[in-house]
Image 1 (cartoon, rainbow, N blue to C red):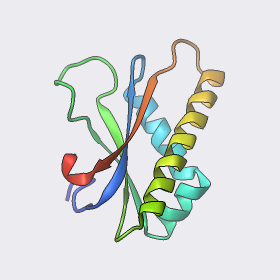
Image 2 (tube, helix red, strand yellow):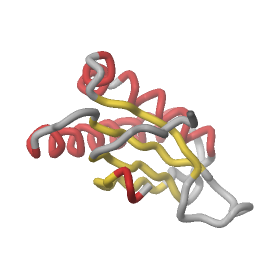
Image 3 (cartoon, rainbow, N blue to C red):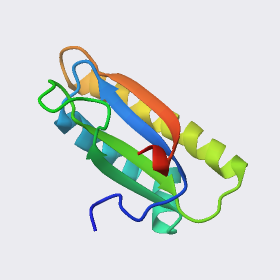
Amino acid sequence: MAEGDGVAGRGVRVRLDGSASNKDVGALKAWLEREKPLEDLVSGGRLRIVEQPRSDVPPGRMGAGMEILLFLLGAGAEAVFDELVAQTRRAVAAWLENRRRVESGDSPRTHVDPVHHDEG
């Protein structure tokens, strides 16, 4: 089974554009996995965080060719999903601020959007 297969339900898509590289995507995924509220959901079996190729860019395009998906597992109330979106946005903003402090050059543009798994 490929990473991300077998995951159904609602989630959050995180994409980096501009100066972002696949290294940035991997670093952001690791950051998200360590963020306390998200880490608790993962360890409790309620959230899965996966990295997968972006579906919106042609092969060979410069920049990050990967995206991160965070999916709630099982039935989740609207409030739980809304909180996941908010927590993810806060975590991405914190990662971006940290990256600005430790990396030179332009910072990537971030996009955090709700998604259904069938939108892939």
